[in-house]
Image (cartoon, rainbow, N blue to C red):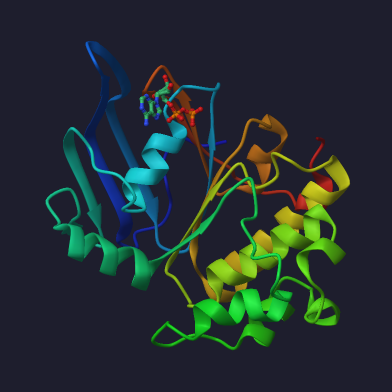
Length: 242
Ligand code: ADP
């Protein structure tokens, strides 16, 4: 690993001094405590760190699902932290795809229909069939979620997230509910999407073995960034030791 990025392309995210304090009654939780972080366009980043270290809070803020208490989040140079609710909604809708640990598919709709729900409201989507082919599910498009394995359901969720051609794909523990063989297939789908669509991809994981598939690895500890490293040589998801 080296300590400096080689690329000179403009950052897609530039986060500085980010703080998030959750207040519940008199109790304050400092979930983020001065986070500085940068992601370059098109890269794949892995966010590691123990439970409660602030990874999801950071992902939710850069994805426009939540707001910081203080600090700055710039998306392609535009400040997000002062955006109105309407601007944040437009930002999420036009630029961000989310993948979570649980797939949240609609059980009464087929894989194709689950993805088409999104392509119908997006401005420049790929077709649902194209999105499902990108994650290797072309032969499963007419299956209902209950007829698909956990890994296949997660790949439908990835297809749904990327069908609108988001510039950013944010994944919170996408393999958290999966066994190793299935998790690797899901990571292969994410790596392919990152390569073929160029979507800047951030993956939260507990699994340190996954770090080597990333261009960049941020490690969180107690609401701060403990380290940022760059992989000189990335490995394929199939080479990950789980
Ligand atoms: P991670 O993703 O690394 O597990 P989180 O960002 O989910 O960490 O949580 C960071 C800290 O913030 C934890 O102490 C968590 O309990 C707290 N936290 C997260 N969301 C909320 C919330 N909505 N209300 C209160 N506390 C929260």
